[in-house]
Picture 1 (cartoon, rainbow, N blue to C red):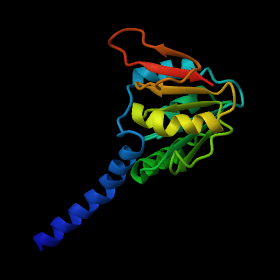
Picture 2 (picture 1 turned 90 degrees about the vertical axis):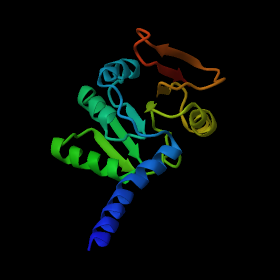
Picture 3 (picture 1 turned 180 degrees about the vertical axis):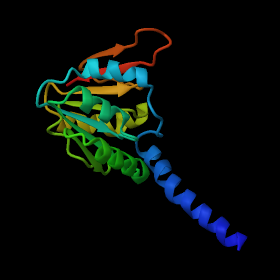
Length: 177
């Protein structure tokens, strides 16, 4: 009996954590961002009415929900591949009835971004440079803003900057195509 219970528990753990581990291999491991950095991201995004904001690898939806609440006249789109985090966000979306937020369960590398005005993501430098940068260069329209939490792109010759009010704050890098 104990063996069946142990196998059942291990199966549940695998069902929950395997998608999270695989998602971490595609962009970055899931780590909830600091709540105090949400305001900085919103300020950098500077969304205007009817603009589209994409969060690639939306995790628990923390950034998406914040952006939707603070930018009610913009469309916020969160993309997440790990189904436990996606399902968590869907339940939260249903409970909060956020009208301007759309959640997509999918691979960020396969989602078209041609209508994006601003993109936010937390991704490792290697992933940014090798996978996302080519996608951004071909799919994003001129003037699109890319916001990267912590990590930066190497050798991208566009208008760029870093928001880091103090050495205790994590850098938020931004690029304008």
